[in-house]
Length: 484
Image 1: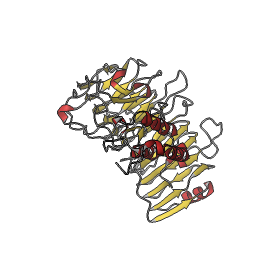
Image 2 (image 1 turned 120 degrees about the vertical axis):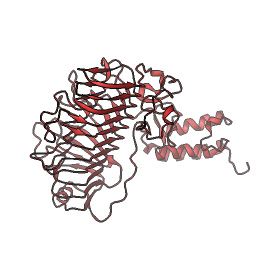
Image 3 (image 1 turned 135 degrees about the vertical axis):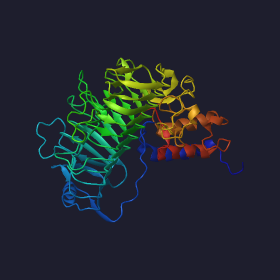
């Protein structure tokens, strides 16, 4: 005990330190998934720091090269076109996608000039686009459409903000000899600042493709103008195969996930004779929350062998049901979903139902008002009541679930919290900043023996716990109620 200084003595020191450091911290809501840092680029690397340098680097791009973009806002005068090269990358320099913004002329401008898209990709295998923001395209923020690909595109930690049509559009181009297969979209954020300009918009829209994974993303306000429905936040159609959509959050989107459309695969370039608009496919561990008018959360149409597992869909009576399967050629499984409304079979569709719970209540969740739909201890109807499923080993946050016979219903497995999911909002304002450090210090002064103030787990409250709180805030290890 001799080496422990009284907390009151160090309060002024910590207060000054907090004032210096903490204001730079912007609280992030629990839903903001932090992308693990990618390995540093190696080999043939070109660094750019202006729009003209970026345009030149892309126009002279060769296979195997990485373009690293330094922080800044890049106002484009022409679409960045990547075509006829393989194993290339376009990356932000810092790993923070907000540091590099590639901006078109705006989704509402009458004349898009030479910037219909921010990035357009043709025949290009093994492309990486990472750690940057694409915004304000007239048509698509990123368009992938090569007649011989692109194959294995990887979109990582990219923020898509506002565009005229689909944010990420993927199709096989004209007279395809190969199809845009095996893509990965992860740790991205797709959002409209408010609403789309018309109905013809989606977050991710993919045609004629196989083996795509869309995981750990956020889809925010993918919605049409007032009174008009936009398309799905995630749409795979024209006979797509084996899509996996998992661990995503959908917040205030008109539709969530749609596999196959009601018109069927009549225009499919890949399998024009197939009766199915989607084959295979797994939709699991997603959270869908909406409090404003919209349509269904999950829909499968002309879809065979689909699996809709362990999703949490809360639509607050903004639509008559939450999950649907449609048409007589649709057949699959709908299991362990937690919803606040009906799950329906339409137009003679077939589905095996098991373990679904359709009467979710606000008090079952950690923070219903902020769309934090992780289970609280009051959700006893969902905890350990799911049916065994071999294909759902983790939950929304990527944490290992209990043994199959003890699965929880819905996207969250109760009791599996991340190491970094720490409470820091001591000021009660829903944010993590200097106010929390001050509130913690005042609380500690008034309650020096409170075991709840033991941040570092050593069994006693000391100044080390106050320092631990400050470190947690600075390192982004806190959970706040805001950030959507």
